[in-house]
View 1 (cartoon, protein in one colour):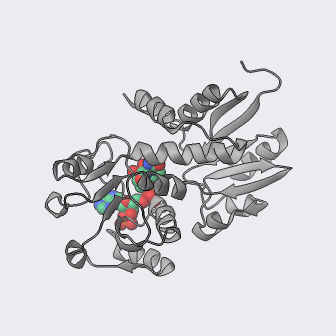
View 2 (cartoon, helix red, strand yellow):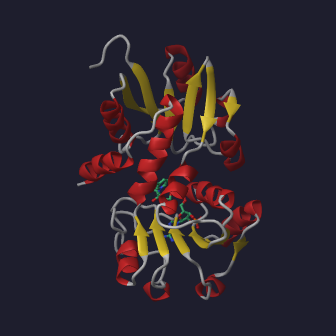
Length: 269
Ligand code: NAP
């Protein structure tokens, strides 16, 4: 029950009314027996929102598009990996200080590690946007050899150069022998459900294929990967895990991932 002791958490972004984060966090808080509530705030003025977080003592905040980088100058401290990625998706309000973290990379890496030991594996990362950038840092952290492919070659090259990875033209990438392929583009996302970011005939049996798109949960890419005998990971795995990592930062307690995923699946049905 919400009472005078309830701790407030939330998400800031714009737009934010479609966000699944309140489903993740309120469900987990309830199961963990925490006296906490989580709301979505559609923010127009970031500076005013930050003053609100400080002034009202909001305990923890998720940050989404378009504020993941813009928020950095407003924070008192930046955790190391968030600083390297230059993107914050989590704020922890602790001892009067706002500390920025990034849990997107952890969500992706932990989902992959359920299926494969990542060290020294060859990974093809499709995309060079915000999510791809966080995942690239996670893969670097785990000692993977990463090849980046992106529609805008220049953007792909820039990300690859930052990380010390390769960015190959499509023709060269098609011949690559990789153990993991990750779709971090928005190709295949509703309403473009009939598209896939990678040709089916190039998917080799036994490799791990992860799609971070979660609407729909079973994308065409994952469907074709299953038909080719690949081991697949859907976008809800990363989504649930990045949220679980936020709760761990805020409360020091680990929520149950499977229950979070169940809540998300029911919300999307
Ligand atoms: P973003 O920064 O806008 O990047 C979009 C990426 O997709 C870019 O690499 C872009 O290539 C590529 N792209 C878009 N349309 C394309 C097309 N028609 N053909 C080829 N490439 C195309 O977006 P983001 O924040 O990284 O998000 C990307 C996707 O991941 C979204 O579907 C989002 O919902 C999902 N996501 C999932 C999670 C999760 O937890 N599961 C977390 C974050 C994001 P260019 O550089 O050439 O434009």
